[in-house]
Length: 247
Image (tube, rainbow, N blue to C red; front, side, top):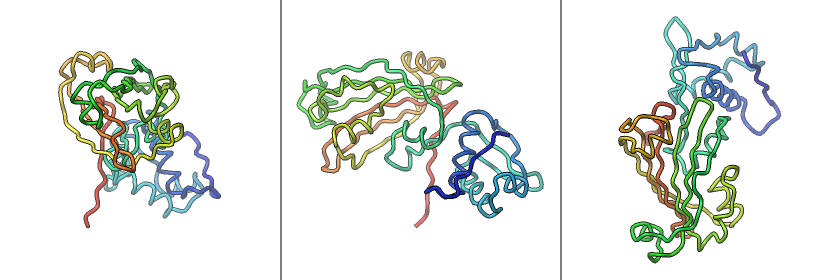
């Protein structure tokens, strides 16, 4: 069993550190589907925490659907799928992967300025023909490709953005930290569709295989549209989950 180091003086709560570590074990394949988690007394003793703290971490993952408890048998891993929080908050996939400790490689397929076609210009509050950055990236984990992203960013609000190295820099991070733009809100729509030839080739799946499709428009604090994106998610390796609360 891989050792986890608990920082009892850190800013992050102990149960959050434990649940984050378990997510990494699941995402990396160290804990495959149907893996049986050690009993609470044994696991808590190994970690040097109370059973209450451990139970809170396990309960979080059970609610997320990553673990399940079977009466009289114990706690098991339900899935090795990566589960980002993009259906719950305005975070980017790279931010979600980093927060979960998932090792992701980014390949930039295209990054250049183009003239905004009329439908895109309308979404971004531009005149047709104004320049936008067309950014195409593929994100992969050791097990294979998981996400193909097409982003279109207003170049008038981020001059020189076509020169940014997006193999290492995130799009939201660049907009916020390099250009001091305050991202405020976004509109995301999810649907299922069959993989096109381009999507299938990028994600190493068959043409027509089911993929999750995400369409998004991102707005700044002042209400200005800054970015539009098309995202295709490999459904075999990544699942979008919403955690909901009833008022």
